[in-house]
Each structure stands twice: as C-alpha cells, then as structure tokens.
Figure: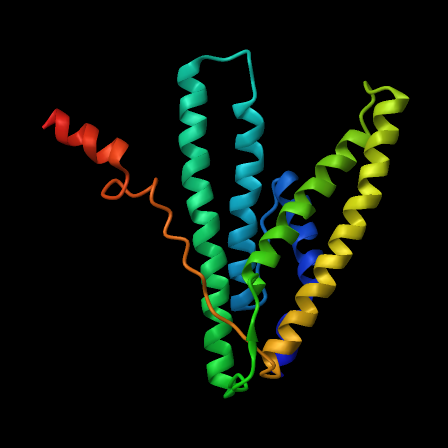
Length: 204
C-alpha cells in the first residue's frame, strides 16, 4: 500500500543499523529500491561527518585541509542529489499507484527526502554522542553533558520520525502534493561559478 512505503521509525532504525555496520567495516544490503536510495544518501552524510572532523584538525598542512574541503564539496553535492532522487522516486511511486493530489491540496516546504536527510544526520549525532559517553579519558561532567544531549537527540528524532510518517500519509491520501525543489548548486558547476570559469578564462 502506497501509504506504508514511508515510516519514519523504520527509516531511523535502518540508518542506525547502517552507521553501526559501517563503523565496524560491514556493508549493508538494501531490501528495496527505496532503501537503496536512503542508504546512498546516508552514506554521503556518513562520509561528510568524518571529512568535517578532519577539516578541523590543526596538526596537518593546508594542502591536506584543501583536499578535505574538496572532498566535502563533492560529498555535499552527492548528498543533495540523493535527497532529490528520493523525492523523484516517491513521486514515481505515487504515479504508479494512481495517487492524485486533491485540487485543494497544499504543498509542504519540506519534502520527505529532506526529512530523511535530517534523520540521517541525527543518527550520526547519536552514534558519535554515544562514543563520547563511553570515553575512558573524559571526565564526569563531559559524560553527563553528552548523556543530556542524547536525551534531546532522541526526542528530536522521534518528532522527525512522526512528522515524516504524517507527511507521507497526507501525500499518499492526496491531501498534500509532493514537489521536488531543485537546488541547482552553482558553486560546484564550473560553468556557473564565476570564480572558476573566470580563472579558467584568464589561464587560456
């Protein structure tokens, strides 16, 4: 049934399982085409998380940091492309199921893909905050601070999961219409970024 394709809690569990597996060197096999897209998007956020950590290092050269920054740009583009692919896939499923939005149906400024992205980031935050709680070299105050944050993160994830489930139910019933909002990141396109095409023109 089209309304059961998206369930926030199940998606959050999939993301948690993937983060755990990837940190332990194991791969995750998607069970459906939608799972595959969700895991691709999640994997880009996973890569971003660790590159962002590297970008804050002060014990390495500027050349290394520049390489990391370029990796961040690439991963961020892939992450955003995957958000759009998830929404494109969902629109295709709606069309196959013959779901049409009612004439008076409203649009939502946030799409299922963008909420799934937020759930992905929270999954990573929870995993790494748990790492902080289990640090042997951290003091009691640090550990308690991280425990307090985990409570807030769990609440935020619950809220997002329920919001995603509710939004999809409204879309699946035709009460809301789903539209993909293209981001058209200009800085990653050499033909649209004046700092890049201007420099290339000057070198020609």
